[in-house]
Amino acid sequence: MEKTSSEDDAVWPTGFMDVGGKSFRWVYTNKPVFVDFTLTEMKNATKWFARWKAYCCNKTKTKHD
Image (cartoon, rainbow, N blue to C red; front, top):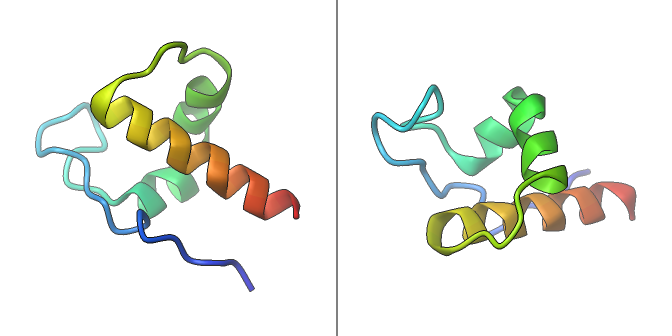
């Protein structure tokens, strides 16, 4: 069973690309290209993107444990 995170229910700001109003959990599950971009290309993330990147790193680590 997959562990839940306190960040699972964080919601992207309304109107942000095609993920606005969606939870981190939804985006992680349904937008694998965005997750891959986040993990491989996003460098020096700040603020909201740093929070999102940390979420992706934690979920990926948990998935592989």
